[in-house]
Length: 77
Image (cartoon, rainbow, N blue to C red; front, side):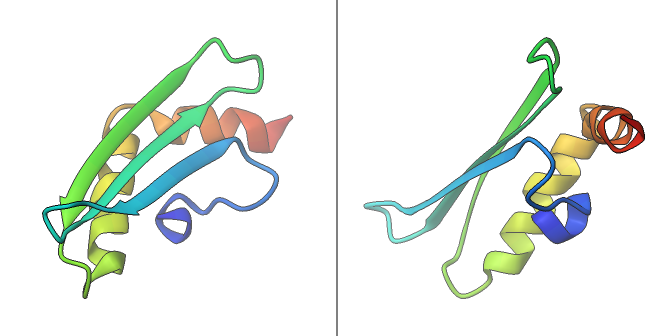
């Protein structure tokens, strides 16, 4: 997910991955502006043997909601 968002330690991107009782991998994520005013969230579920695909799907959802604008403003700061 971070690779798709071009994120790292200096951007406010959070993710929580967990194995569900259904045997699937669950991923919840958020991108937040530095002042905390803007935030986009996304979640997804996928098979445990393809976590990269799940991360890419959740990242795409975040980007579709405007995460790129938030991240770009942070990189300019």
